[in-house]
Image (cartoon, rainbow, N blue to C red; front, side, top):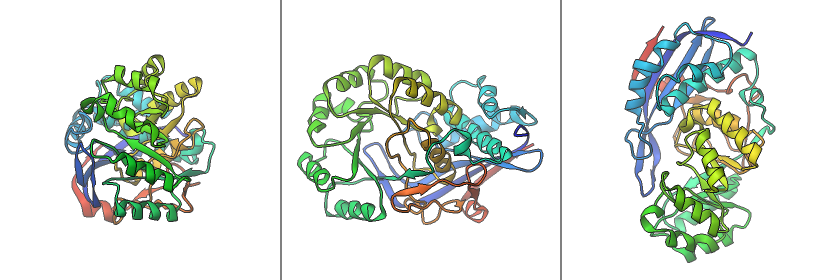
Length: 370
């Protein structure tokens, strides 16, 4: 049977330097701190999860430290010796704790991975995935200059299907238009990270004619009225990212016509259980989805890849190879991009294991429950 009893939960707090700083108008990330979770059943089988909060609250109100505290004091203890009959049960059991979606997501994902391993099925097949290979896309930061062109060329040579750029008041519209025109085979996404709430909607509208596939989160997450107006007047689709924290937010987006595309980040909305609810609502209303990234490690990315196999996921997501951000990832095997795609594993669960030597190398703190 796929059901299991949780006998032990291990938390690994790690800190890994990026190969190159990841810079936006919000923050520059040089070192990525994270929490890896192992949920262990009565037979010693392990399910893996990853908490994708950042070290400081520049992206969401949750941080690595708040998630560590929530996991340690409230979320993990009640799960020990819990009989899990279906993977959604863990998410439901944690509803007594308000918010803390990123902390909950790590436990939810680990339970799904463990359930799939007990079922002897790849997670993506258990979820109802329809594609065995996932189109890869990368995020490139910095100005539109010779170096960026070189990085776009390298992306094309690697086979990436999509390039996402950050836009702000310094973005040269003519240079952006020429870049997009030079590579007609690529999807070009632009991410505002909410900056047009400060710059004003009129400064967003000038991006409508440069040839972008979509513009992601131009306004801060609370500015629903501005997003609705932009979606009404612009021909370039608005994709909501930070505004989408739950299935209720998706319902609001649809009702208000505040966006035409959903950026789904499983680690932010609470995990796979909530992501499946969002996918179902998007399917009912024929809203396209793409899967966003959080500068995460391979555990979170493997879960995201499984969700990217679902039918309503219609655009290339934030899926790069393991060596894009890191000299070496903390999983084995590494994630590889071949001809612009990532082949999903046929192994049970997410198809990856922790590289124990790498985790030990970057370990800050470890806690074991059970």
